[in-house]
Structure formats: structure tokens, C-alpha cells
Image (cartoon, rainbow, N blue to C red; front, side, top):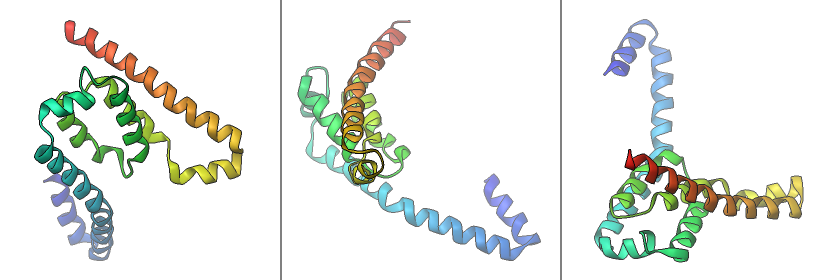
Length: 156
């Protein structure tokens, strides 16, 4: 509501600036909308096709190595702004996804396949490969640490 009031005041004093601001807002919404739509579509499909017990098997307490692989691959493959993934991850957590796998997913968003050729060009194959492997390995360490801290926090 406060932003609407600010836009009205801006429109009274400088209509050209208001028009430019609204064009910028429309452009931002146009860039965000497809990603938001994709996330909500994935949420809809997970609610439609996956029961909680199946998701628990892939991403829950007994998921094991398969859960880690899904979280790591999902984090690497994900694109768009990170905050667009929060609703989906919250939904999956409600269905039993472990905190460690959420942390691993978010950590692996830093590994970007489309940017690897540029990293290889500037830093070489060795650096790009070692950094990518370290990112994946440390995502597991980070996930285990988050799971441990989340468990301790819930006991208090």
C-alpha cells in the first residue's frame, strides 16, 4: 500500500518519471513471471503426482544416497532467482524433505553448467573441475551441518 501511495505522489510531481518507473516495474514482472510460473507448475505437479510417502522415500529420512543425488542435481540444474525456489522447497519440506537436502540444493545453485565454459576460459580446466567438485562435496558437508544444527535447535 505504501508503494502505491509513493507512485501516486510521484505521478503528481513528475509524471514522466512515474511512467519510466512503471515501465521498469512491468519489465521486472515480465522477467520474473515465467520463473514464478515454472515453480508453481512444478509445485502443482508434485502435489498431483507424488504422494507424501513417495517423496519421503526420495527426499525424506530414508532417502540415503538417492536423496543427496536428487538434491545436488536439482540445485545444479535450477535457474532463476533463488527466492523463487523457496515456495517449492517449503512445500517439499512439508512433505518430508530433510533440511540437509534443502541446504545441499541451495548450495549447489552456485554450480552453473552454462557458466562452466567461461570459467574454463578464464581459469583453466583444472581450476573449474576442482572448484565444481569441491562445491558438490562441501554441499554435503553443509547439509549435514545444517541438519545437525536444525536438530539441536528443535530440541531447545
